[in-house]
Image 1: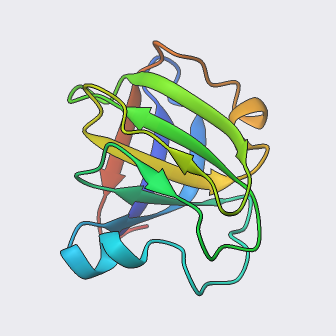
Image 2: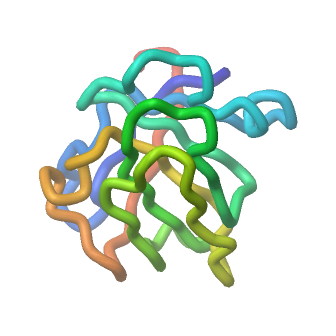
Length: 121
């Protein structure tokens, strides 16, 4: 699993300081299942992905759907356990975050995000 950061491209503002990547079949299938509540500075990028579920989860998530240019095309705030979101047409990846993150980061449909991975994160 790679680790990085998620930033708002227009301002460089940090959205998530600790972004984990789930890009293998096993990591995408598992997602956040079986993990304790995700912290406010963490996020999980699932790639490729156009829909998620919270079956088996015990907490709500905020969910961002991104297109191939990392532009936000759909947002879900506080998706409760045992729910589905998507599939969303044109979505290439999804970022799962702690509930409240969308409002806290002032994110909106049309915002472009920047995903940075590297050893320094």
